[in-house]
Length: 509
Image (tube, rainbow, N blue to C red; front, side, top):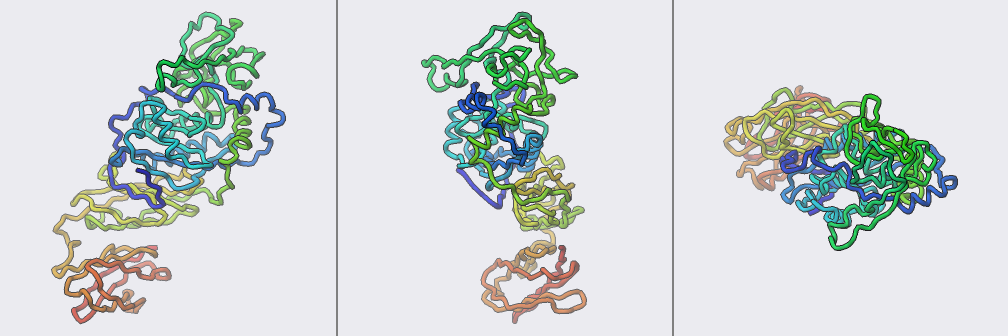
């Protein structure tokens, strides 16, 4: 099932990641080894294809967040925003930035959520891809890898490799923009570092052919092994001269100088260490900091030509520098178990907000997780007599790095509390409103079918607004025009021949 929503409500425990592989159990990357035809052509025609403009290239991103069939396990929205922030930070030096082209796609499919083969990922992508965008899928298990890229599909990223300090997404985005590994040809190989390497290596350029038909021999290609002196850098390995030789195709930790502890020998017997700063290497995330200048030129040229359909106009949206402030409820305010409005201040330049509520200050389980364009949401039924923590993060289509607000707290009332309807069945909530909010009325049966007068007064008794209201159901919603009202206390009065009902309201801007 696939859902595309502008306002997203999730009332499940979406942070449960049971049975997902730990990062240290995953292969770093499942992208097939090889040099794309485009990169070979570019390497032969750099002078004509170099993209000389320094303007920022804005890449339209289509995000797909996978969950199990029952909707559980989806990557939390705040962590997804952190991953987006990291992606744009990693690409900042290249003047390439990603923006949300459309609403996030929510896909509930257990087979895709934790797929064990690349062909299953192919099916996921070809079924759900959006045209003219960089399609990115966040899943529990991307075929046993931290991530992978399919040139004709998109990228898949594992939850456990997508923290705010991980560079897996940048690595796979580099693949999507035609960058190979700097150790191309060495994927899956082990060799004796104490002896010179051969002048060439062969490799399986599908990297997963045996998952399709084990009777088909591995299709092989040949890569020249790069020399330390750079004499063959334009035709060897990744065809990029400022990514120096690297023959390590397993995860490794760099030393204090950011280099590999392993000392390797090139075909001429010259010792060297691999550069751990490159995003396209297999160095640990803590080592990686950059794309090389030539890698950046390759990616920008690829976007200007082969991937030009991914580019869009610069979003006219500024950065978000002001934190959201919660307005209500706060400081352990007692609220009804259902129908409470969480209200917060708007943040300049924000178009959307992530809202979370949990019984745990760590937010390990989230009973409420929403994305909305409003500055309020209404909670579903929560557990009675419990303390809840809630927080908000602001974002827009191009800026995702604003901090989460501090947590505010509220306490759900016992079922016998005064928030229950009165003896006649009357109830009015929420009691804290902002412009645009809806007031919920629960009406006694005896009032049904009656035309009533509804009015609002300030604390001095001055009439602020009145109207006629036909009581047509047990539950009704009332829109009070609050736009020009001052912050403060007001009184709602509803009256007809059956009697008068009053409710104090707090107006918060």
